[in-house]
Amino acid sequence: MKMNDGIRRLQGISVAGCQRQVTRLIQARSENSLRWLYAPWACLVFVPFFFLWTALVCTTIVLVSRFGKSYLLDRLPVVWARPICWANLTSVEIVGKDRIVSGQSYVVISNHQSQFDILAVNGYLMMPIRWVMKASLRKVPFLGSASDAMGHVFIDRSQNKKAIASLKEAWSRVSNGVSVHFFAEGTRSPDGRLRPFKKGAFKTALDLDLPILPISITGSFRILPKGSVRPLPGHIQIRVHEPVDVGKYGAQNLDQLMADTHQIIAGGLVE
Image (cartoon, rainbow, N blue to C red):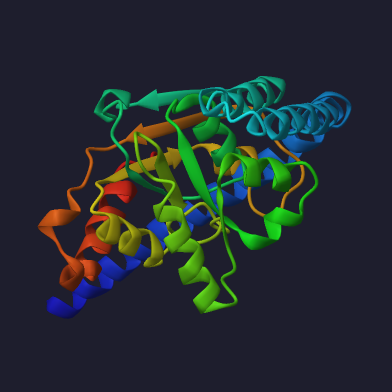
């Protein structure tokens, strides 16, 4: 009897798994067709606008930074990101924004599905943020110099000591309502699913004794998945969760802090 029940359960899992695989295959083929249909707009409108607008706004950021106008610098990322989302016919929804306390600094931690995550957060979350970025991005024309001027933090993951030094450098930039943002997975998800988190963001929160602000980003993977250069229009949802008080954990419970935050962010992802 038990054996028969086990076989039935395995059959059920197998059928459900096959159904999911077939659904994903159909969706992938459908989206691939849509990308080709959308390609003329992307090539003739979105891509030229993206590069020209990025060059213009990044140049403005560098110039403004030389005059020390920090209140203007924190508004320019919005000026950069929103029109680019509009040009790609992309809307962004913020859920739970009232959980962000004005003037409070956070260690913001989110999942990372697409390059459009950066546009959505910069354009719509409306809080002063310093990003933790790959060191290679410093060499990108316009973007690298503007990120330097904004005070973003570059991390060289290939050299552990330099990475630690860069994180410590970030500490001095997180105060007076300015927050630091980590994509805790370390890179974009190859399939849109949430990956394991790295420790750097959580150690930073514990060292600074700042609350973690978990946010879940959904919808951006469909717009521009990792490895693709052909975007689609779409809708992105950013769900802001209740801040996590790191004081309840302490350094000795780092793994539990990571696990709880991972669970919170996973719970906010919309299928």
